[in-house]
Image (cartoon, rainbow, N blue to C red; front, side):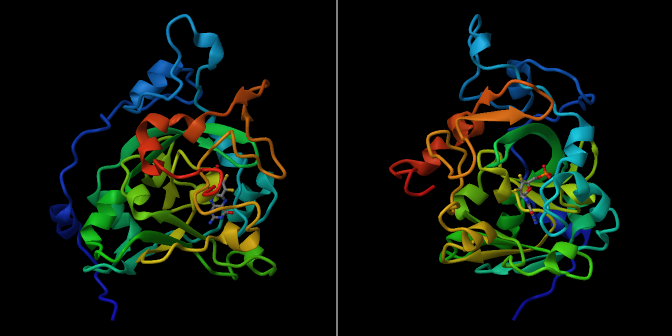
Length: 312
Ligand code: MTE
């Protein structure tokens, strides 16, 4: 039986493992501010896989924050529409509060949490991440959120838990895209448990210093910066620890095109879109796509011994 727990902020806060400050809190960076790659990555507490050496800047152009305007108006959110420019308008009325997030499956302490409480209970960190869509475009987004790990640790996974499954909202009355069949709703995603516990894996509740707008996945979404953007599931209602590898929405839709891992990998071609280069929204020239989206130093060890052209 599912134990329903409507935690008070104090309950949750006292259960949270204190954060070892991997990511220093940092001052908010103004919209459109241009940063050198080194400064940007340092701001994230990260060293990029391809951080340019002095004098070699030409090989990897610097990362610049994508404008708030672009982040808010160029969206993939199939529950509304497949038209990126129309999502913001259609999503405007989405009811995002109250919003309950269920955490269950193979855990000792299942629970149902109000997202507003999670936001108060966990320190909201700013994380500037690259987002690389499998369609060949990319952005740099200043998220607000907390590591998924913190929520999973509270749930206390059982030894049989190997994967994490995420379900997005299913509500055809609010989500016009779900009224037309053809897709296997709800949108589902999955991670291996060690990927889910990685410090880079974020539950985002905001961007550009404000609460997450509906079109970007309000009130809570996943962000896994070394994987293609479709792994970063929006408007999550359920997180389940499971024994078997989940079948994601895109695996079910098109198994030939989408595998479970979906790590950004310029060496694994996609039948419809180029993966060696990408178009950074707001820029004219295409840039080279980096292995693991530039986060190889942090995550490559997770895939040691695997053939990433098979487990793609
Ligand atoms: N989550 C849900 N629930 N539905 C979606 O259609 N699209 C994914 C991902 N998460 C999607 C989703 C894809 S393909 C991408 S590239 C990113 O969201 C886009 O996130 P953004 O619109 O905030 O940039």
